[in-house]
Image (tube, rainbow, N blue to C red; front, side, top):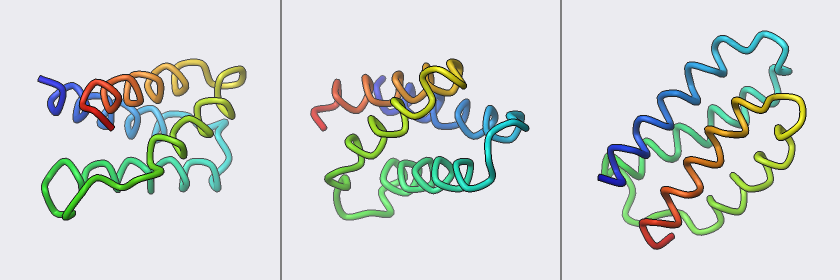
Length: 87
């Protein structure tokens, strides 16, 4: 179930952000906001999936690839799941 996989990935991302002390607060805030937006859309609180969200996630992925590979892996999972859902 893609939606369940997406929820698991978003939860994992939020956990990693809470545990990642070396990630600057500004970056944590940006990723937390993306995670919240995903949760709102998954819960049906939004009329439609936000266009551009995948682009924003891809930018975050590039930013975290070297310094925070675990966070980058989770973001990549989220992007893959969203793409599988046709977004």
